[in-house]
Image (cartoon, rainbow, N blue to C red; front, side):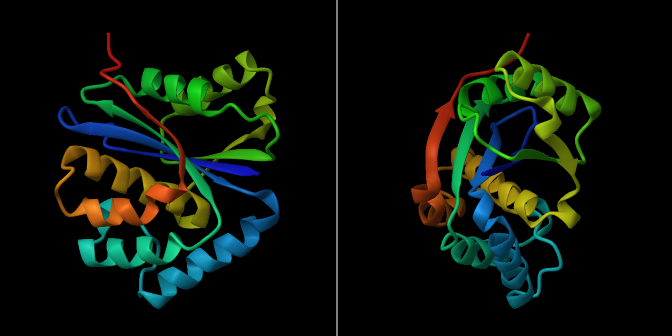
Length: 185
């Protein structure tokens, strides 16, 4: 299995932040990534990025990717948070498997993301060589995690808003959901 990690809302001082860890079985990674690219082409999206797209395209993308074989684990926090502590907490409690090929993190993150995750992995007895950063433009798996983190955060920000129907489409993919309070000083 391969794990892709992205977050949403960590820069905000209100509402929620979320970390999504999308789990894809290793044998299916290439097929799922090809399917994500095909979905993006179908909807004339060059690269899915939650914050850059209107609700109509978010809905179309999530409707189609919800049919793909993957699992997701999410951690949700009330803002404001300290992103490094929230990510560490998320990884400690959501990364319980040890039999995976790699963990890919959105490469637009500061260096602390990689360092914090490496510490968590070492503490859990997992090789830090399995951790890599990728830019969302180059990784359909990261774009999937971005979509899942975005819809999760949007749903928790407003459970009766536009994200609710989208959340319902992907909710069956969620195998673990941690909802915490504030992670701050």
